[in-house]
Image (cartoon, rainbow, N blue to C red):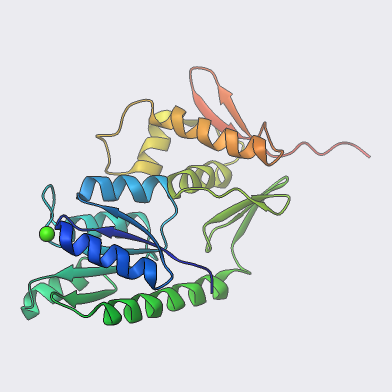
Length: 236
Ligand code: CA
């Protein structure tokens, strides 16, 4: 099993430190943030395999963050941590899309065991889907189920948003997509994003594609948007 990266979203410093240290000592890579907004940004920009989420966050309910993360990625394993142990709160957590729920105070060993179980299940799902559902454009191969993209077999190490953007362009190849369309399809409800976000992310993708030897995959159509062209077949 690969070393899993856990994102801990918890505003309570002692709990955040204890959970982060405990998970690191148990073999997880750990990133920890204090607010829902930082959590959302982190998932957007970095690789995250599992999320541990507090409900009572300063800027947004952990349940709302859970819903947003779930809307972006149906398979990201999310475990909710909360001081509330009423049945209705647990049900609300699961209804918001969480995969598991742990009530504070909890034993670290139980959190670790539950995260291992969630990670095992998600790796199994990845493996089951890995032979299906590959989009190919020239040297670029996008594995839709595992959410990875590779050029000539070299993994591009894309973040979630980069992957979504590349996939939308590849699915609609030979169609020029406007910035507005891409914003809608990739960022969805997030209309608070900066207006140049599409250009910024196309830039990130181009850098990664170029590093893998496929510099010209995404073409800019001036005044319109972006397109991935089907490879030209040279005449025999
Ligand atoms: Ca809290």
